[in-house]
Length: 459
Image (cartoon, rainbow, N blue to C red; front, top):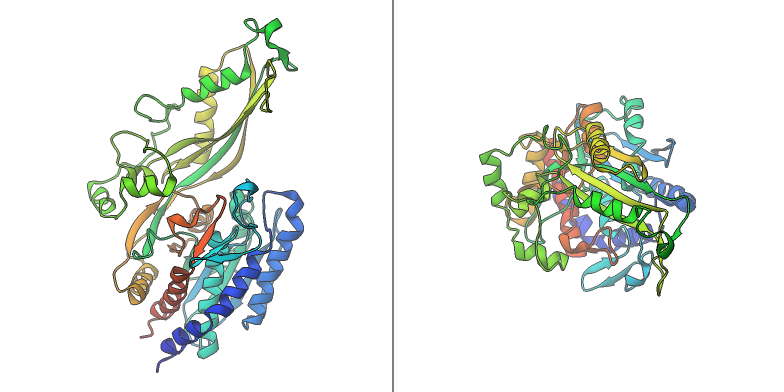
């Protein structure tokens, strides 16, 4: 038996133990966007610290930021010249709303049909515990083959506003050879996946103001411009008849997809029927001249995330609302600058909004997109690791979601991230009834054990 085999067997014998830790973790409502949950955020950080201590890592620090704290931990290998892997995670979760759509309490984990339900089960508390479990199994059965560093933040779900400053301030502390980021996902339980591209994200709130108070629509209708109408018309103009974004200059910095990359993406086993089944939508929509796979991860988008105006209660109330608000986000692709996007949106509004209203635009987040080198030794090590467990080579894809830390680490630490994760499209992350497929998660733990040995060059 080898050390690798011992670690793999140890993890298999302790799945229930690791799952129990994960369930305790899920019970902490670590919602970063809710000020009321600040004590729970600190509780989650301390939970991670205690688990790391329990797993034999004594060098654990809870480091303050302007927002929620970052947990940092380090465990050095006794092997001379061992490579260093920095493992990223985030302990914050999305709000569980709307609560009435959950079948069980979002913070009381429940298992049904091989799935663990609860907010954060997949995104990304399950991925954090998988990483810790892999380390623990290796450490419990022999000498660790690499130097381990962990950085687990509490603000990813609000755009990581304080992480770039933290990285810049702690560059020496975070020195490493590669970054492992398990905050991505897999295409299906049968298809292990490595993500090599992530979209960036910019997020805005647009407010349109009309009269200084709500007005009687009979007395003033026809002479006062309704802010809800103004906002609706403005939003309608943000896409053209081919569903392209109409902000001036929006596509100027977009790098065209090469024929080779379009061919690679076409190999992904995701069909239009799959997307309709996963979403429940009656049909697909999107930018013409690009197929759904390309639109999902390699093309920029503009979405309306929420709107609010006027009377929305039961029955009727005939008013002209005094204001209207929309939450707007753009998923950007490599080379698009968040600051330029802000200016493009501002210019669009100035060009299209009438003088009958006032307005303001707030930017809440701005993260860059990223592309990783698939020939990196870390990617090669993970490719072999996933094949070790699944028996087939992994697929490579560009992910439509955003993980701001990946681009930040590229720019500030000068290191690429190896992106994987064991969540599935059916996990319903950010939605009611989020869950984690436990058989896939368990295979993920085994894959990470293989990864650490592969990266260290130990057969």
